[in-house]
Amino acid sequence: MTSPQLDIASAQAIVLEHCRALPTEEVPVDEALGLTLAEQIVAAADVPSMANSAMDGFAAEAGESGRELKVIGESRAGHPSDVRVGPGEAMRISTGAAMPAGANAVAPIEVVEDAGDSVTLLEALVDGQNVRSAGEDLKAGSEVLEDGRELGPAELGIAVAAGRAELSVIRRPLVAVIATGDELREPGAELAPGELHDSNLTTLQAMARTAGAEVVLARQVGDDPQLTRESFDEALQLADVVVCSGGVSVGPHDHVKGALSELGVEQHFWRVALRPGRPTWFGSREERLVFGLPGNPVSVMVTFLLFVAPALRALQRRAPQQGLAATLGEPIKRHPDRDECVRVRLVEGEAFATGPQGSHILSSMALADALAVVPRGDGDLAAGSAIELLSLQP
Ligand code: AMP
Ligand code: MG
Image (cartoon, rainbow, N blue to C red; front, side, top):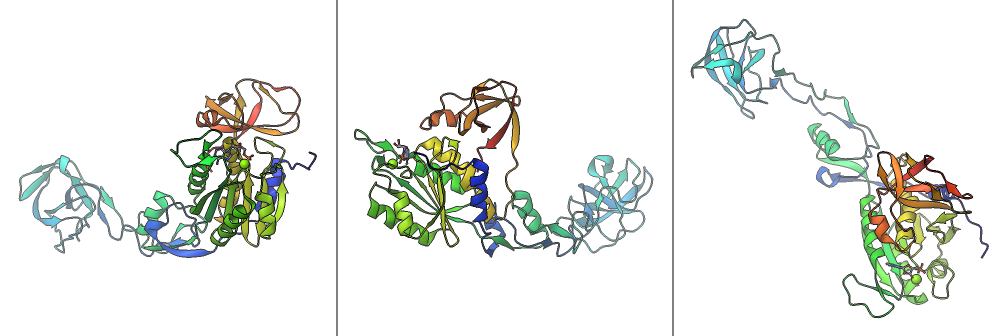
């Protein structure tokens, strides 16, 4: 079978040519974890909004050690005092509570002798000591987060501190996953001869979600042309990205390509010079992307990481993942005409194969820290060679 095979980078470039960032929407900040910010966030006011104490202690005027000060009241977090602190006076104050007028320093509780209605300072106090000034974290009007930022816990927290309850974000990509094959059974089902548990549907959903997508359809479909077409038809109505496993090779029971062609999905490539994952298929219909991944479970993961994950990043306006580098810890035999993604564990920057590398051996994937991309060639790639790594995190 001599159909042209693309190299990995060319196939990735074709995928990215067909990716357009998804539209934006407003979401409550508590629903924005992992999404891409689609606006610039500016602080609505100074944070903190007022000068406040960094310690539990006594607010007073700066001055020498040994002073005995009359305690005239208390400023607690959320309960400021409007009493002014005069010379010879102090106010009990808690961490985060507003500094009272007249005081410019805080003596921590540990360095005073507390007699209840008076305190004696055991150390000198300098102007500003243990005081957080207004706007020390964020100045009103300053940029807090730039457009395009990926929203993690710190970003969400600072957006709230900056005064926001809702954020404009790139909508989550909607993904449909379809596992094809007459041999597939539900997780946990009793297997008849020739059957197997459908692990791909679970793996694909997990990868899609890890990449920030929402799974809107997960369907198992037998090797039947009509049912295959119906499932893809439904998937194309619901999802931005349709990902299927199996049925993209050339066997008499492989119906994916035929079904997609009937549904008007245009093929952009089929077959990549890659191991595992050669029969990978990619096409689109208008803005909808369709990935036909090979059926073997390791091929599914490798081709998802190489082709689907970059597409999901681009749809969410995220930068491509940075390539990582390592050194081969042992020689690895090269494939003569396909680049190979080898499951490796990493020991102090050196990569070692995790075990048998067949595309059906999921156990060696579960042991891996990363995939090492071993370029095609003759003979072994020697121990000590520099190697590019692909993260297992989509
Ligand atoms: P195919 O690409 O459809 O020829 O599938 C190749 C092989 O991958 C099959 O013979 C199965 O052993 C395996 N396979 C296909 N689909 C799944 C699945 N959903 N879960 C686990 N293994 C699968
Ligand atoms: Mg099949």
